[in-house]
Length: 290
Image 1: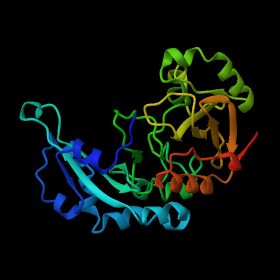
Image 2 (image 1 turned 120 degrees about the vertical axis):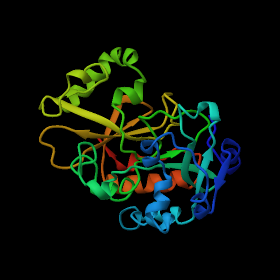
Image 3 (image 1 turned 180 degrees about the vertical axis):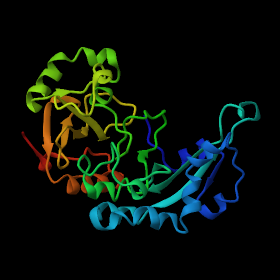
């Protein structure tokens, strides 16, 4: 696995626009209006100053991350699709930024937290309001660009489409089904049945017996399921009144701890990732048993 730098980005796309206004003049093929409506080009149509508009929400609640993001340089990239593939796929586009020689992608959504407020997943009883009004206020998800196809359910940085614990730690239903001791341990800790890949079809958010753990971010490379790094989960359960976040170390559920002061912890973590450091971030000052 290799994280993208500017050279890798420019080799992977046909056009990379560092002057975002010039991207608006580019010829882009969209297969249909739906594909166009989810393209990050919409950020350029909605905001006069994209960089300021996307990072300004961090200023109050994620100040360390904000200070690092001020040094970023935004881009819009296009990989053209061959004519014979046009009936099946639109041009591939990405928007993101370069910071400390690393490339990060952002995903556009028509319905960010700024517009719709609390929803089933983006709820301030599940995710701290300070995270919703910074990381997820106008952006659907953040990803560090890699030379592999990134899973849709996990990322090194916060995202709205959060994968279940089993998908993030164990990859698939077959592996998840073998983790009998792990789920028994968690269910004793929470005194609730933990939603897994194998019982998800039976799960309903309105049953008091369940707790659902979804991955807000995972410090490992997106395609990695190795026993390394830190995995941070948000929880949801009936009767919840405020966010409860948890940290698992090295993909080992027996290390699970509660994340205290999660807003500060995530701010320091985000600044660490954007700094370009290769060292693992230490969550231990923000972890306590429960």
